[in-house]
Length: 404
Image 1 (cartoon, rainbow, N blue to C red):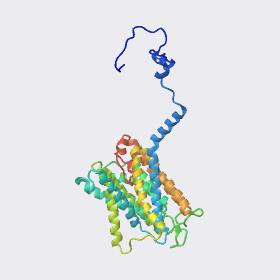
Image 2 (cartoon, rainbow, N blue to C red):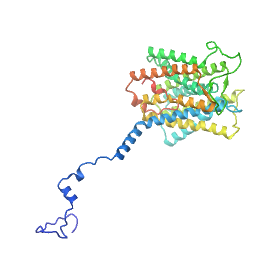
Image 3 (cartoon, helix red, strand yellow):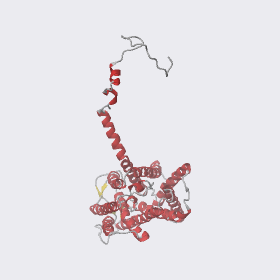
Image 4 (tube, rainbow, N blue to C red):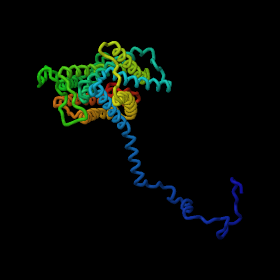
């Protein structure tokens, strides 16, 4: 019979026939409202384990991305130090900056051109001055960090970057008239004392060696891949001063980012940073009589130089993905793992461990940074959603601790 019609039999057959098939037991259960199909089945043990793994994955994927980003940041620091000290051909910090930021700017420009990012490449007219300031300040901050790596240990240079939260609060107080609390001022003083322990200036920490003799910045601890780098107390003090100058410039750049806000896509701000860093480093190298572009002399040097650009790009990708998925507090705390990577790298590559004064100074600086972070989180507990919606650049690891 055709579908959609119903036939009424004249009489119910008394026995089974071809036109009235017998009901199976499971059909009877359904007709009688039995539990066979209506009640949900209990998940198996394998399903419960799978659900737990998926929940853990969803909850901690952002932290994993931040962790990987810190690994690439440490790789960049190691590569910079190797190129500046590990070969007969020494690469100046400006050339390393040129290579890294050229890659960042090229990849960023191609991405924004492909995605037709609004405001690309110059941004809205009303914030172009701020974007220029962000680019210049970020370039100075990057130079301070990279130059310090020529003379400071990776862990010491990394610790000094943790001054950024306190310095940013101070810059915001001066430029934006935002409150600068007593806790922040005290944390800044503690961090400054920590920097003195790391720098070990001769007028506070008299050298144990004769004047003019180089001293090792780390205590040796067995053989590494390369011999420890020797520097004089004066070189260490100058490098520390450059690192502090760099963190102050970075704090200025972060303050500028906050003033710009959402008036332009964050990638446009990153592109200004990359463009100014590339251009300024190139001009200084070409103009300065004692500087010139070095050509890598071996495949290892080519690989290290190119890895800086790749590591910088991957750092940008992972820190962006991580901070978009994760709460600012958890992500920022995990960023201190970069110091652990730095210590491992120093031990494996150069066979050295931190001196006692460096450990004391690191404890002061990190303790002050964590204290400032905790105080700010208590004062502004409702800003996580706004912070996660922004796309940060690779130098923004402590911007998450600033005020809204």
